[in-house]
Length: 219
Ligand code: CDP
Image 1 (cartoon, rainbow, N blue to C red):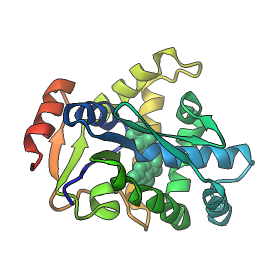
Image 2: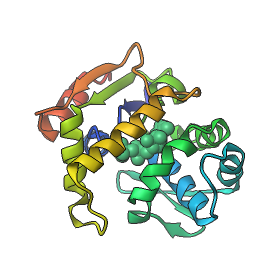
Image 3: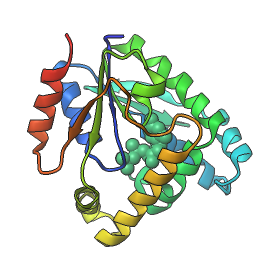
Image 4: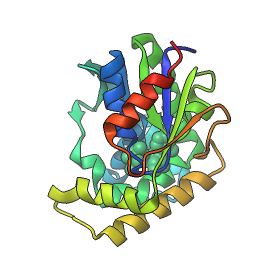
């Protein structure tokens, strides 16, 4: 499958920034699969669901019907007519999303959405299981990582204008907790695909990582 570039990796490893830029470089579509898990989480929390209840999580996921649309080089979605941006990036969503993502039936729902996307163009899709489970036949797979300190620093800097600014230490422990759940869940855990190119972005500029990925892609 030559029309999917899979970029997986742990939380805050720089996937979004890099994947968006790669999509522009190749005139493809950037897909943030994590945003879909965050949207399900947002809906679950609105409905007062305890996200440790996998049966309830599954019902919420199955009740959602995102409306996907293309804007420039990004594949966006609305839920019940609403675009969700900052709402998906709160500490409460961060603390709950890995439980939604560990719910097998919620993963099945997201998988169906993601599998329809290649019809729309060449995808640069970021996530945790894109190269291992969603598109295991993708010709181009990358696993983007960075040191825990750098990841916490980057995420802390991104939150600079948010109302709920956490300390670097708090951000670090939230990222570590999420990575632990994401790597140890039964269904499609975060892991490196055997055929993925590993990229450590610690100390590297965004431009360098984008170039490395674009240069490594099989045409
Ligand atoms: O941006 P960040 O790296 O913090 O996370 P994200 O990509 O928005 O993903 C949020 C959460 O969704 C992750 O911690 C995983 O629990 C889940 N996720 C997943 O399980 N599989 C994916 N393909 C993408 C995200």
